Length: 142
Image (cartoon, rainbow, N blue to C red; front, side, top):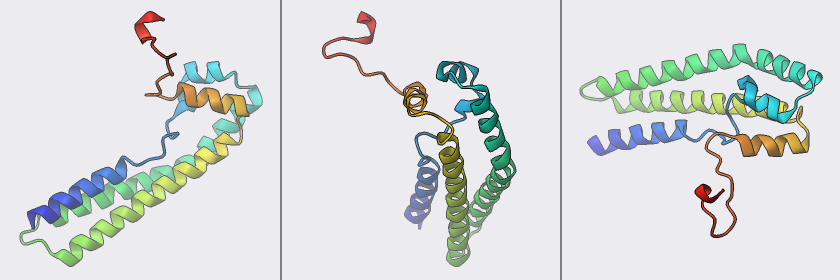
């Protein structure tokens, strides 16, 4: 029983971590938008896209939060009702799926605003992205 609960908690945590790599709020980072050299029209399109998706994303994030609370409540029962816990797990999975879908759709729309070079530059500027070093050269040698 404990293994099942531990497995479920690990699974639910790993699902949250599996967001597409390109999803982060780059449009709200002045340093990034400046380095991308966005035009006024591009900035307007990005702002409109974010505003279009914002209400839906707020709702979906609330659903994810509610589903997480419901699942936690099911785990707190003693004994755990397997059927209700599984329903709570399915609701959480569905909510996270909806969130990933909405974020991916917004990212796709934002991608269509960028030129190919801007997209490449954005990938290079992504947090956690490490620039490739020439063979045998360490970052300190730069």
